[in-house]
Image (cartoon, rainbow, N blue to C red; front, side):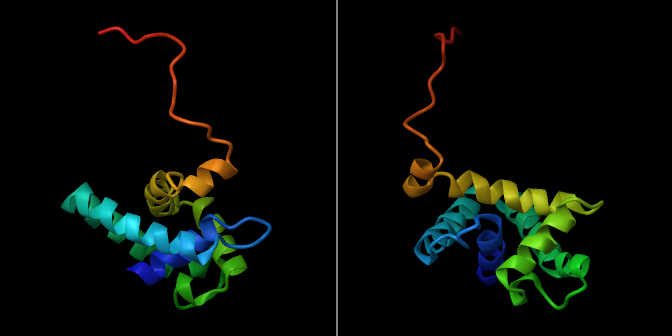
Length: 127
């Protein structure tokens, strides 16, 4: 699963400068393993099924085969974008949501997006 998840993540978090540093993707793979272990069997099943569908189906949206991981990064981005904009968007969104939850916890990513600390609330929450 990691090869396909890595291919998805590289495309998802790419910028004009290219994919994120390999060390950050390595970190993401370790964190995702831990996250999915703790998420429980139902979440692992849904995530795995969604990733499997995206891995096999997204290249078809750009008339390529066999899998997402076999494409170069720009082709992956195009394949994921087209699938997400289609009737088959649900599996893309499921994988994307899981990855984003973990990816944006990385300290370098938080600095890059301007995160300056913990969330604060404008007023005290009352029970």
